[in-house]
Length: 306
Image 1 (cartoon, one colour):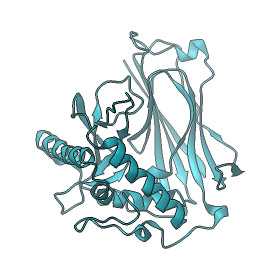
Image 2 (image 1 turned 45 degrees about the vertical axis):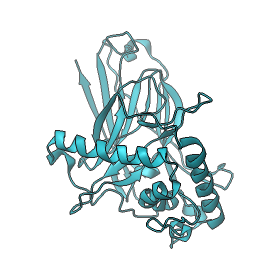
Image 3 (image 1 turned 180 degrees about the vertical axis):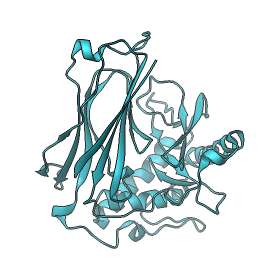
């Protein structure tokens, strides 16, 4: 694990589904190959930032905040294989402002670092390598926007995922046609959730959930079964009849090869950007975040990540 290069850019489901047409055996979600505990590496970016920001890995938005954050952001869901991966941070002005804070002048204690750990069943860290600091090349001037990228080389990721690697380059589509297509798919999912049809929704999430078990190193059939039972229960009890209409959204295409796509809320004052939301009688709200891809040779989107 080593830091390669730095770039700077400054700009002025259910346990066993009963549906006859959509049936998932929970055993399908248990990885066929297991990684030894001492090699179950988890990579993450440690953040301590004080401005509105967006964090990307390989040009995929994985974390954002409107007021800054102190957090650990896991990278494993977005790492398909070993190799060089680009991490990017973008800073924006505070609400009502026109420039980002003069980071060079203010000397704020920003923290951005790259970490590799192994955790146990209680999610306590049992092995940790020294964090690699990702230095900000700040300038002593007011800027309307700040962006910086680092290349990180990972050589000991103990799995390979297909993910969206076989997806179409969505930048080559007519964007109006593409947006109509993705909105129609989200509308279909919204109807499924509003019907409380957990069987069908979990079936559509099958590819995502198979890969989640791999990068989460989750090999316990009982744990996987319980997670799906709770997820299905929430759809039947919380989503049924409570899904709000799709509104105030925009289409976003992500990835260095433009293979991931999602609909996101335009408003920035939400904790998550997902447009599939409930509005429950209690006032509570539940969000189903999704990222899709369109396999080569296919005309049907596939859910691949949250």
